[in-house]
Image 1 (spheres, rainbow, N blue to C red):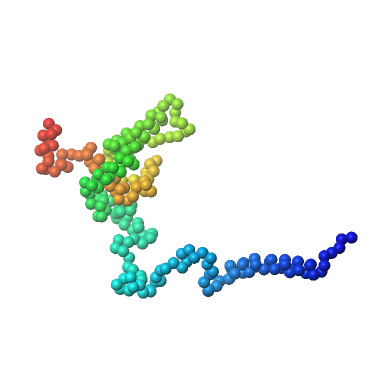
Image 2: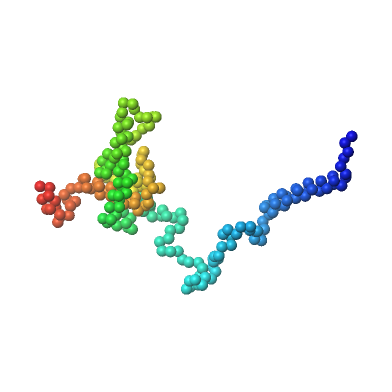
Length: 231
């Protein structure tokens, strides 16, 4: 015959079980109930950092205000694309024919564009822009081999920037292509900043002009010297 434990032990066990159920209930209740009092912080982190509240006084500045006006040239978050000329290469719903006013065409700008072009674009388009870059030549060789492309891959011939269609592209469209890509070409918006993409676009137009310029494009004071050098 099995003897039962004393009644006081059973009573104590029931009380202990009920006591263990209280903390989870209290925690769940506290988490679900809004409280106007400040929460207990075991680790202060940045909750109690020294700072000035809005509309409070700050003796650091001459006018005594904690809130400061925006720094000149500050752009609100989400509004960086308001200047579509700068961010998209579009003016009035059409491709821009000029660079943004903040980027005058200078020798330094074109040299910067040449450097960025040689780094990012020449691998496929070639240094002269004729679509004869090292990567493109190698890819076309592999595509035309007797074994055929490996694993079903494909390659599209890099476009010559001196093709009449490409040559007629506005500088804004070239900027947009450098940003977002076109057809099988990927965009470089994540790798190259806005200023450098405009520099590349300006250099591409300069590169195109260098291979398709007429004597009428040369300043009059330089024409005679060029004619003599050509002879």
